[in-house]
Length: 308
Image (cartoon, rainbow, N blue to C red; front, side, top):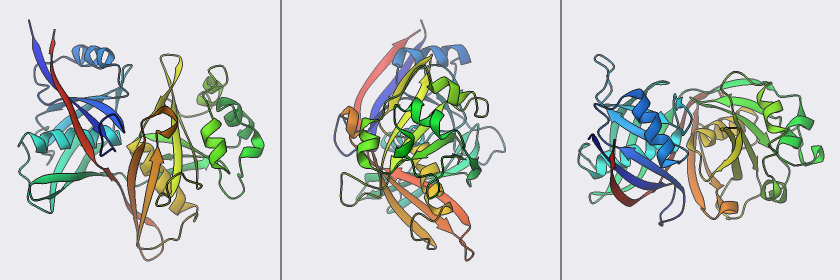
């Protein structure tokens, strides 16, 4: 019988039962693709990660494979942050305060990750994403509104266009006027697939957001809806979408554009898992985006063993 050890953490939270839960298998060697996918389905979380030795010549310290219950994805934010928290917690990354940098190999490329610490205690983990790629404004406002059970009047597309953005994993960013619209949104299982059909292959996610917030120090309030196994699921905290959102806000000049723009995105409040996601977007002298990073706190929740 094959055994595989896992660690459960809550990402983007300082308290247990907040943020986004993640299962990390710190040693994925010997597991087949099918076994990884089956374990991710068994965990039934938004993502499960498997740590492997890096590909020779990649320059990475670790290779990480990221699975949803249905498929492998090229990159995701909260799995990256949670995985490197576990690797540092277990001593596989030697922490040098205040910031330790490691390199992660994923399908989206080789990306840096920073572990921030003080007196040997990890305070947060930061993942650097790819430079953003922006699609054209998505013109089917009525379709997006129906997919989110909202009205077209909830959108202000002249100032805040609905737009596909990718910093490693693409999300359709759907800004609305008010906090109430975000809070009342819900996935419409009959209309959601019609929007997805108009997007590039494998884009299954809509991120509804606004610039009216619950917490005073937040920049945005957001919810992430995805089409998973023909059902609509809501993610409590989404690092990949937050990076796309930060890039979107800078690109569309919805925030003051400086060499370094820092934002806080709040998510998960409507489903009882409040999350705080720190976003930083750096720009050059012409205001063009140089880099996008997303970070947050992680809580160690539990340990376990899987038997295959």
